[in-house]
Image 1 (cartoon, rainbow, N blue to C red):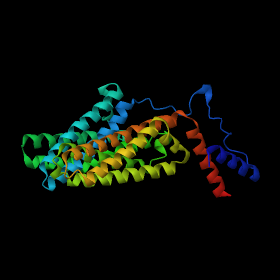
Image 2: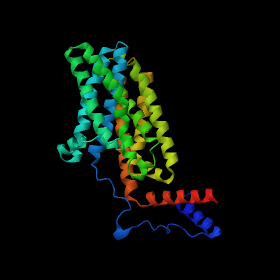
Image 3: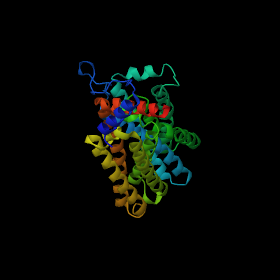
Image 4: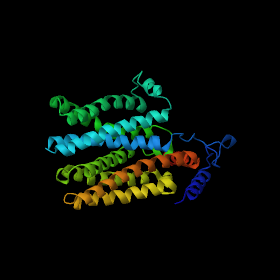
Length: 323
């Protein structure tokens, strides 16, 4: 049923019950032509890049620890290095968007448990040195026990680093993000696992990529299932994930994830070129997912109907339940 049809049916129910609408019928405009919500002013390369690189870093640390524990030193080393580079790039993108490095420092002056941004800043400060120590000590072949502790610490913090940006986005009023607060962390977690697996396939010997190939399939399945469930539950707001720039990126992510996971499962263990192509597809899929989510959020904030219509549907649902 289209949004106008839903709106007309809701008006009919109110007329039959003789009720006065609590909210005036929407014309989807506001004072002086301004949007109902102020759209995010974040730059796509900075914030979507921050989402993507943070996921790559966090999931990479988990895979690195697993590779080290199962006797795959080359894969573990490659993932530790990529995680260090990714978290450095993620932090740089965040600071660049903030405008001045001092603003990142200011976020560390207090720890506010109710603020995802505050917790995320402290999480980066704890994870960064652990990921850095794990990579540097492995490459330098120094202090193996300290390196193992750093690897374990980065792996423990890795899942939170990979997915906390979804909580950060869902904590805003942006309809495409806030309405997806249940599924978005799973979308980001699956996307991160696919990206880290792709990096392992690109950089490690095929003989050492067994866990990465398994994680590639699991990550692609989790991301795809969570993304479809998210769009189904969002109702009309899902339009922003299915059309325009975000829709193109979402479709590209789905195709690349399936291709990369299939290549990882069927070919990457035997052929170096197939492993590299599968890895590149998985990395591209993860990046498309993060940029698609970003652009969907911006579009949903720019159009007032994605704020007003869901509010009215919830109001009608509560009125129907009460009658």
